[in-house]
Every structure is written in C-alpha cells, then in structure tokens.
Image (tube, protein in one colour):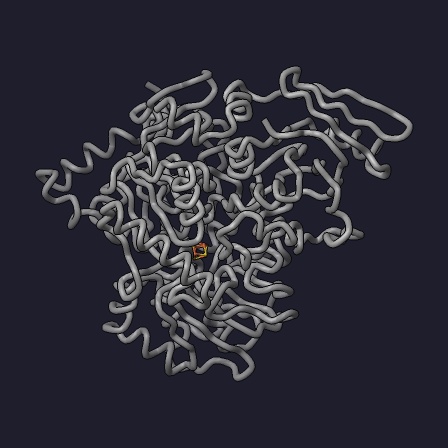
Length: 174
Length: 428
Ligand code: SF4
C-alpha cells in the first residue's frame, strides 16, 4: 500500500482539468518519471507557483470536478511522482477518480460543506494530513488545531488500494 | 421491463459484481492509439503479462501525431506498431491509412449497437452515437482491457436529454451540444450516461450524432448514447449485411437494446432548439458559451477545421458551402484536416478540398494534429484560434493560446472575416 500522509497542497478552485495537471505536450513521454517537474505547470490559480508550491507536498485538497477533461493517467502519475498519493475534493471527474484507484492511489470525496470548512480552518496554514484507509478517517492538523473527518470509499476501491491496483486484481480474478 | 439502453447493455455484458457496487463488463472492443497505449504496453511487458485477450476485438491506430514529429512521437508509434504485429492485431492503421480514432473506427464498421467499448481517450463517448456503451478510460483500465477484455463501471444513471423543435437554418449539431453543455455545465452529467433523444436527434445523420455524442464527456458524462434506428442500420449495412437477412431484421435485433418507454431516468431535460442561434465558447471551459452574435468581432489568428468532433465529410461540406467563392482574411491562418483518408478522398472527389485550397486553407493529412496542440498548428502565446474541436482548456492548442469552439460553418465564416462571425454573412 502507498503512503497517504504529509503536507497539504490547497488548490482553491473547481474544475481543475488534466491539461492543467499535466499539459498534453508531455504525453509523448513514456517514462512516468518525466512527468515530475511538470505537475500543475499550466494551472490557472492566483498566487500559485508550481515551481515552489508543489515541493514537499503529499496531499492535494481541492474543490469540485477535479481532474476533468482528458483521460490521461499521466495526471495521477505526475502527482505520484511528486509524492502525492491522495487527493481530497468535493467531487471528481469519473475517469480521473478511477485512474487514481487503479494506480492504488486515493481519491476521497467529502461534502462541499466539509471541504469549505477544511479550507476555512486550515487553508491558510501549513497543514498535514494522515489518512487511515482501514478506519476510513482523515486526520488533518495545523499548528493550532487537529480535526478528524470520516470518509467513504467502496469496498472495491479499498480492495484496489490494498492489492496495489487493478491490473493485479483483474489478472487474478478474470 | 423499464430499463434504459445503458442498463440493458450492462446486463448483457455483466461478468461479475465483485462488491455489489461495481459491474465488471465484458468488452466487445478495445480501441488503441499511440499516445495512451504505449505506456500500457510497457507496463504489461514489465509485469510479464504481454498478452492480449482477443486480437480481433482490439483495433489500433496512430492518429494523434502522424507523421511522427520527433524522436519521442516516433517511439510511441514504434511501440504500438510492433505490439500490433507481435499479437496479430490485423486492424491496425498506420500512415497512409490512418485517421482520427473516433472517425476511422466507426467508418470501418467496428462499432455496433449494444457493444461495450473502451479506449484510453476521453472522447470514446463518440461511439455512443451508434447505440453502444463506449467510454474513455485511463491507462490501467486500458491495460486490463487489453489483457482480459473486461472493465469496471459503476451502474450507470442515465440523463435523458430530449432535443426537440425545428432546427433553424445555419444551426448545427455542434451548436446543439454547446447548448446542452451550457445548460447542464461541465459536470452536469458526471458518472451518468447521457441518452440523446427527441425528433432532432432522430432526424440527424450519423455524422451529426457523432458530433453530439463526442462532447458528452465535456458535461462529465461517461457515454453519450443515441438510440439505434434505421439511420444507424443504413450506415452499418455494408459491414453487417452477411449477418442479417434484411435491414429490418438488423433493426429489430438492435432495437432490443432500446430504452423501454417506462425506463427510469436519474434526470431528464428537454431542449427546444427552434430559436437556437449559432454558439461559440469563450474562456477556458466548454460550458462558457455565448451566441456568436455576442462574440462577433473577436480577433482570431488561426482557424482549425477538423478533429473527432467536426472533421467528417458533412462538416467539411458545411464549411465549404460557406467558403465557396471567398478567400480567407489575410491575417488568418486556415487549417483543415479531414478526419480519415476516406473522408479526404471523398472531399477531393466532391471538389470540397479545392474550395478550401482556393480560399487559402492549408489541407493537412488526417490527424488529431492541432486539436491538442501537439503538431500541425500549435498556437503561440497570446494567439487565438477558432476551432471546430471540443476543448477550449487553457493551453489546449498551445501554451498561452486561446481556443473558441464553434461549428464548421461559424469557423469558415470567421476565417473569411478574420474575426468571429456568423455564417449567414456569407451563406445566404
Ligand atoms: S481529435 Fe482531438 S479530441 Fe479528438 S481524439 Fe484527437 S486529440 Fe482527442
């Protein structure tokens, strides 16, 4: 199982698409590692600088419809190569969400209210997150406070995370 | 009965329901192109699983960057080419025979009503135009599709969108789908299948239905399905005539997949297009849509007519009708890419290519090319394109470039005018 804890990168916007996560021009790369320096390179978000803001982060917290657009699995790979194995959002585009679990990564959906609260209480601080997959709990903490949030993922998604992804699962079962 | 077409297709292909909440479906087709498949192939090789479930159900094409533009894209083509050969994948389309995946595969008769289809490409929803369940997937799903011929999906909720009324002159399938996306927004159909019905869809040709289904994913939908009818059968007849005794016989069998009258929909919406005017996008989201009349005069640097949305014969015809007898504005670069070699040669025979060339367009070989800003017409920073494609995301056709999505008619009129313009200016 991958590691689901560390510093949070807050992306305060909805509809962040996969072209913003990893631009199409890098799709000619065949090695996942080549994605690393280009994560979120074209993201339109005030105050965000991919050169400095991505480093040392392990988790993305964002708003609605994260990962919309192209089906490219290069988007989760670009996150993974930067040590980001978990994205928490109020909703995901279908293909992106599936790609995350297929790679054994976590895409957690919280309600809009919960996400807004997280942004309000932690968005301006240096927050850390630790996800307990067994217990379905996110622990988020900053210098002055700690919060636990329960989440839900399906048994199938949990099985994918625990067996290390869909290829191994499918080859064994079908 | 009360089932939707998507539910019926799911039921007919169900292989397993491992935890109740997901369905593992058997696949009729796995389509492949050179951008997303090589990574899947490499990974299968690395895992010691370099196998394919059925070489006859896998179809592959080099379409995104062709001819290769550099060593990297050449390598992607090479990996796909060698893999197709190694596994006896007969239906592999390489240079000279290749075209945009979502145009060439239907044209070869590979898509039929009731099929389940995946591809590592988000616009795979296009094939829903034939009454198939076709969905874009990521690399891992593609890998498993290639290896085992299965894919998982959540049970689909269906969003029924009825398109009714009388379609005004100069308004096309592209304007209709832009209207749909504007109304339901970019995630209005996330995790849902859109079922397009209504008299306007019934009256559409397959080319137009493909334009409609193509952009379902821009509203978040898994697939965009049109119900099979005689138009579908007529399109497919040359490929299926040995399997059915008559066209009616084929239709009767395909109709088993049609939604029941009392099927249950998660959402429904009716859009009357009788007053619709040509539309165009602004900004970086496909639901940012305005009437052309409100965007008139917007400066453009390049016009691109092509792609899996609007690069088919009918689209070229529509653009040519506007262009005929005109030349494009001297400040504008015009590029047209017929989506397949067949479309290209039909357009040649019908004098359409000549109209484009006389107007000052550059005619490229069939390819995705400029659509995703990888070759054949990448924008410079600050440049603006009028395009018949499906995505206006920031940087889509080149970093720092802006893309306005529109119909082929609007694109052609804009090319002549040198700014966004309505086709009725030139096409009376
Ligand atoms: S034409 Fe554009 S949208 Fe269609 S498959 Fe090619 S790159 Fe994708």
